[in-house]
Amino acid sequence: MKCALVTGGSRGIGKAVSIALAELGHHVLINYKSNETEALNTLEKIKSKGGTAELIPFDVADKSSVDAALDAWMQNNADSKIVVLVNNAGIKNDSLMMWMQESQWKTVLDTSLNGFFYITQKLLMPMLVNKFGRIINIVSVSGLKGLSGQTNYSAAKAGVIGATKALAQEVARKGVTVNAIAPGFIRTDMTKDMPEKDLAKTIPVQRFGEPEEVAALVAFLASDKAAYITGEVISINGGLY
Ligand code: NDP
Image (cartoon, rainbow, N blue to C red):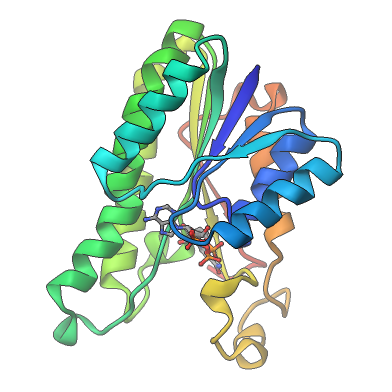
């Protein structure tokens, strides 16, 4: 079975990505941390469209949780291969640097940057042996230009961008591509408390993006057609740089 693991697949961008990859014919492993109801909703949506998927809860920021879940899955599914990995799970916890608690710094970096490391390192070897893999990291405009109030989030996403470029060079000749997608404002739970009307005026396209628009780009990068794109950071931001 051709499988795709989507971290943070219960809500927002990850939900749309899970559905899009199932439509491409992948069996999707829907990861989430705590919101089982929304994860089940993603699963049901995939099934209602004729796709297949399963839930795989773990905390991406906790290496022992990642190892336990993925080791067990690989043991129980020895004939299946995870050929697509979408490192999407992420959180923000904004504060000006002056007031930022160490816990705010740590949780944001642990989730995006360390989570990327724990999961990618585990799934990389089978991709290299199989001579095929697609690793797609969801970063942010914040990691490209830096945003006030987000030193932790900007650092985490910039870290993943650097890792994307380095890893792409390590594994390109083994048929594994590694790319990052940098969304601007996308309409999800993460942005629901933002003043959308006011912010939309600052975006050339004059609106927030939809999770499905990001998912379409992920689906393309996951496809065979994207074999010659690697080490790239693709913005999807309505013109907001
Ligand atoms: P949401 O807040 O809507 O969803 C976050 C998802 O990540 C949920 O599925 C959540 O699971 C999961 N998650 C969070 N922490 C963990 C963890 N420690 N372990 C496992 N899963 C976890 O976020 P978005 O869909 O908006 O964001 C998705 C990604 O896109 C993030 O990396 C974000 O930084 C990035 N991004 C988003 C933008 C936006 O405007 N929305 C803009 C730029 C980047 P659960 O449901 O269990 O809590």
